Image 1 (cartoon, rainbow, N blue to C red):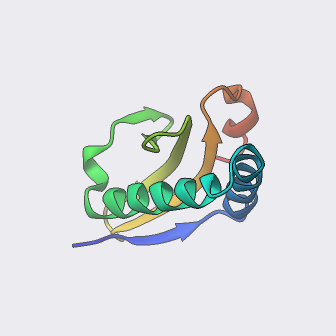
Image 2: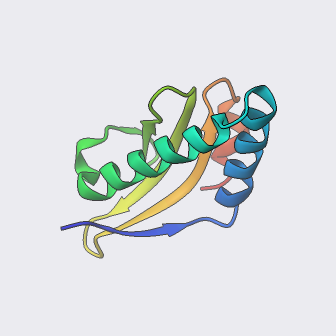
Image 3: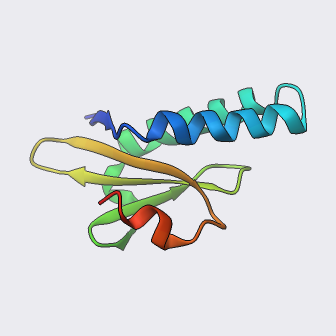
Length: 100
């Protein structure tokens, strides 16, 4: 069964920043980023336990064709994903660990 999905308040800003950058780089690239992001979130919602835990009960899934990862927690009892952020892979972990 597909998990419910909840988002931290920061996620929208994370995604908007990436989309803005990609659209400056190439017209339509931001749309491709969004499409791949949605596909990965849907995959995670269908298969939350298939993604490896990376740190402090947080799982991380890479977005296809983009150097970004989705950081989330899965609460099995409630069957709920909580998306903590969408981060560029070069970002220092200290910058996003405070979202926990």
